[in-house]
Length: 143
Image (cartoon, rainbow, N blue to C red; front, side):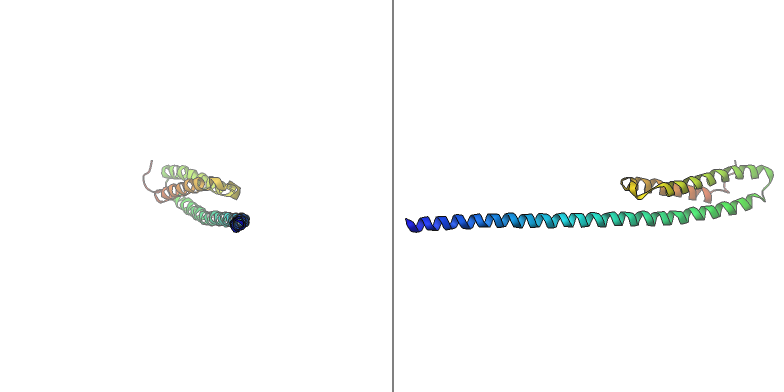
């Protein structure tokens, strides 16, 4: 009887000790997981910032190309007859204003608006594509 009682007491003490060790191990694992989450968030934020900066750089180059196109078209318009000149200048004026607006939109977008990044990027790219098509089609149909 005494042996059984000692054995039961030993089992109870051992199981209590292992529970506290399990709690400590679980707390360590939770702390490690929290640290990993923080590091992952930092890496994600940096990747997002890098993506925004790369996009801005590429978009600025495309806008600069549009500005060169505007200058070239302006020179070519100068050689047109009076009727066509008015039509082309009006078209060019619209494209020039769009280019200025896009430049401003790009400049005004900040990394603090990262939750809006994807929708901004898609819309801005779409607008750049439309503007590029307008430049390619500029000399097409005369109104």
